[in-house]
Amino acid sequence: MAFALETVNPHLLLHFINSNGHLIHTYGYALVFLFIMLEDFGIPSPGEITLVSASLIASQGRLNIILVLFIAWVGAVTGDNIGFAIGHFGGERLFVRYGKIFRLTQEHFDGLKKFFNRYGGIFILIARFFEGARQLNGIISGSAGMRWLYFLIYNLTGAALWVGVWGFGAYMLGSRLFKYIPVIKNFAYYSLAAIFIFILAFILLSLWRKKEKYKYK
Image 1 (cartoon, one colour):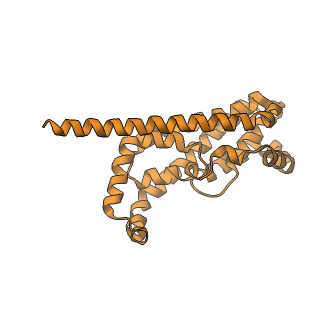
Image 2 (cartoon, helix red, strand yellow; image 1 turned 135 degrees about the horizontal axis):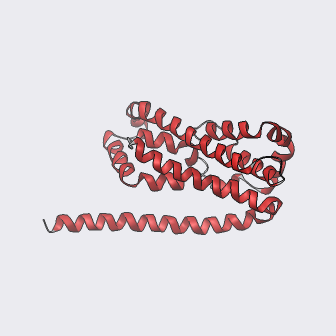
Image 3 (cartoon, one colour; image 1 turned 60 degrees about the horizontal axis):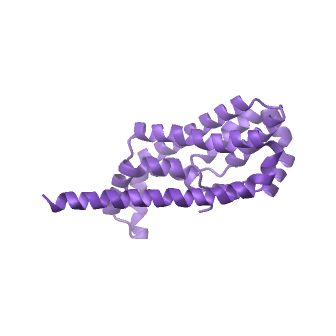
């Protein structure tokens, strides 16, 4: 699973803009919505790089950045909710049917449900910044039986953070983004490591408290 920053490298971004700049300039808002929506429920699509490209074009005054960010956010939320519905209505049946191939049992699935209903919100926020996890987090959440309202709250927040980082960040940096991508990438790895350590510590502390609670009963 590759971190999302690796999909937005300077050479790929420049090539994408040079090859599709005229389309983004003409159909930018529709393309941002379409590609991000498709990407966010599992269909291979250049959603993230389209958002960055549209934001860079907006920094030149050829698109409205407020509309780009809003439409990207709506597309992200819509795509994830479609994925959630797919997982909710068909995920468990697929797991039961094909899980045995990977030696996964109903007990494993029940454990996944418990995990997502307790820690799923953190997963949704972090998954938004991962290539692969971003596309599947709605399907996984729906399959795990997460409550939809709980999913929606974190999905709205995660989508806003993601759009803010890549959309507004690219708009503010403009052409300087090409220079700072390696710096952002290094900073993101350190931030990601810190987040994982925090989550692990939180889970271990919760398990320890639960163990201590039962010890004195």
